[in-house]
Image (tube, rainbow, N blue to C red):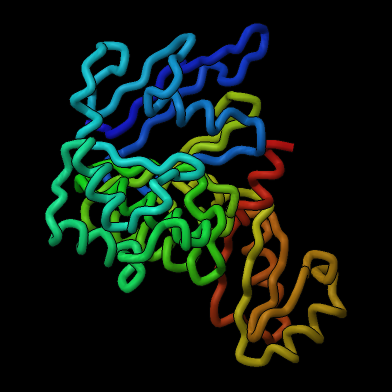
Length: 299
């Protein structure tokens, strides 16, 4: 049973259509990227998912249970951090977790609080007042709160906001760890390179509508590819390429790789030409950049 099923979802504010017939599904164990430019309807959709605003049309199902049923059993299986988390600023992180955990019926034992504090990287700062926390530390505390009841599904709305580069790396590793623990992660993010690194599936929306959905590999394995050809003699490879008709396809050199922008049916032709010129590649790796794909769909 899928953790999330969205079908024909719509939301209007007066004459403005924020979300328009949006449909997508999140499979168990996914790290699911939810992408779109500013104003695409991402935050509105997430707020509908979490019951903060009501849909104008369509349906949302968590683990097979429709949110329109009025039952909220599914919420026990969901943890979320939405935009800027807020806390009692003069209390410590531990005290905040105890209060919010008690309100939601989560386990507030010292052992469980220790578990989530270690998981999000706040060990040593958990007894500090939240007023002394940076924005990035508050993001970590918000994530700890979302994980306190050990949810099966974790919804993250722009979780890297306010994090420094090391914090972004830590969150990336934590997200992968959550999946390894058997959890499903649904994440909205504007850092496309991070989504490309860790997401298993994704949907891209524009003007409230889905413009692409599927596995990251399938969506990026298409025409207009960035293709890396690896060589033992990179200088020779550069020299012969500069004298050939393939020069205009060559974009850059990185280490022992020449990177070309090609259509999928041109990869074999270039490889055959290189071999015929006495410069056989020892490796070929093709991939479409998520950033390029995203801009093409949402431009």
